[in-house]
Length: 114
Length: 113
Image (cartoon, rainbow over all chains, first blue to last red; front, side):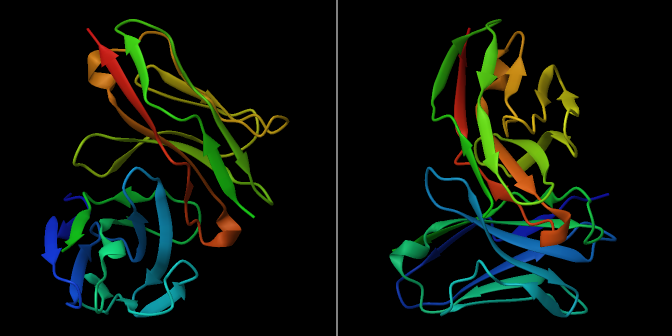
């Protein structure tokens, strides 16, 4: 059973470009969480999605950031008009239900904004 | 609100030394508590967890006890190995808050031969 997959693993963008990060949850998992890890810091919650629904986006910046988890395909975290402060590692985690269940983390996408 | 505070690193130990990494939390309700480990360039791996007061989580020689009276979940290992070198994160989640994690800032552990 493949684990959580994220791609790309490394992404370099210039200021003002768009960054698109993908997360494929574990097979059978329909719940996805996105977290951001700034350098030398812990992970901070961004958004929680179920298939076709955003359940909790309380950690998402109000502007430039959006997330989706379509019926088919991976979850996407999109950052428009990136700035240097967006440079971070972005991790997604998946679980099989919204009740208490372990979250399995992907290897992360490391975004560098030049 | 919900938050986790853990001791700052780096922590440097010799092989076979005793390890303690302190973690305290603030939460409303009844959180579950976790320790995750992150090796360089990788994602987080669950090390152990405890879901209610006085529970002890254990795995690979690591232990942590959920202490509600002191709101703590300190990580311990009796004899560390070089392969334990990594960053350790304490975290909490609540069922009534979508199970999203609140992480501490991480503690880097360096174990020298």
